[in-house]
Length: 488
Image (cartoon, rainbow, N blue to C red; front, side, top):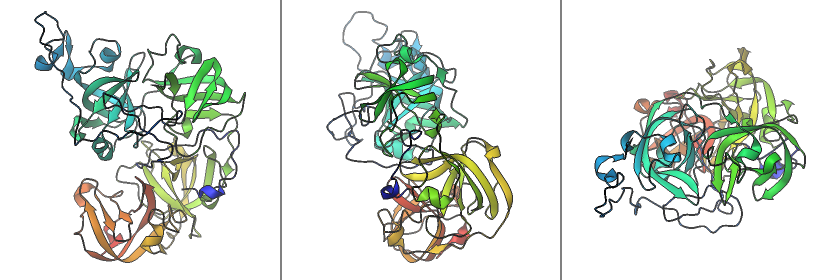
């Protein structure tokens, strides 16, 4: 996480603030107002202007998710939908997004979609992600609104294929699938999200002839210029009157662009909120411009705010301090000198790399932040090059209270290998495979299979716990790498 006081400059090439794929979440109460409607959905406008904050729906009083059967005796194929699982010729238990967006399924129907692919990260504080039929094209995408329990239990990322059950609703003009229970989403397989559909910006701008067709679909526009650098809070406008929103990139920074600045491409799902269609870039990689400062940098420079978000960076001679995560989608590196500001997470996604602790690596990727967790995002496995071997830097001995969320050294040691000693367990969360220490620091199973991760009893003491420090769900987390890092 950057020290925000040190971020004193942002070049024209630094646009919206980046997001990444490390599972984490942070909410800024001053700018993430959630708007709830009669369908229990969430306005996806994020920071799109002044809105009031309503209490988000909870599962203690969930809205009805079944379709009421009309009492009319008139023969209507939709009348028996709730009883038979069909609407006319549509099987609600094996429906498609095309059928929803094509008007073949009435609003309020509970449907099951099979084999759809997640195309965006989840904006946790809003409970919103996007899914799409793998074949793509017009009418292939839709927003998913999830209750908090669903968001907290979902570990899937873009590219994951799922079966999903929910209620089709229209919330302030945007089609959404409302999901109320964690069991309503089943992971089928992992893969990569589909390539964005390249479209003309004027066609998908508000009122454009293709805007409704591509609502919810992963799209891209190419060779566009900024025509209004601040058309609304968290938004700018490009060629054709198309708006770009920081929905997935919030809260890192507002859009900082210049009039007439050119983008080679801008990609993301097409949202509809606050009466406008707009593209929501998902990560730094969705915004491509010719002006990307960066080059050879040190981890210290990144972590101390000397490198702008969205910059393409190369870190040379770093030491790998962890194995790959259990999901094989990332690892931690550290400057050999160690100390504060010396570590960072490298996200590789589905790009297979072969590294282990002690490898010396050169890493090239995009520096971004996922809800204030710093990382280098690598999209090409060939950009992680092992150049030798070296001792893993010794863990820094720190006080748990200093590196917990809001602690005086939490930002300084983010990404760094640390050890805490003589700590006690205050709480255990079975659902998420983590436990909390009395000083507020969380301990997580990032590197463990669930079957191998043994949660302690409340009150248990540990002589020491060691691992790289991460940040997610508004909490700092220590991540033991192997059982040897856990000393009772």
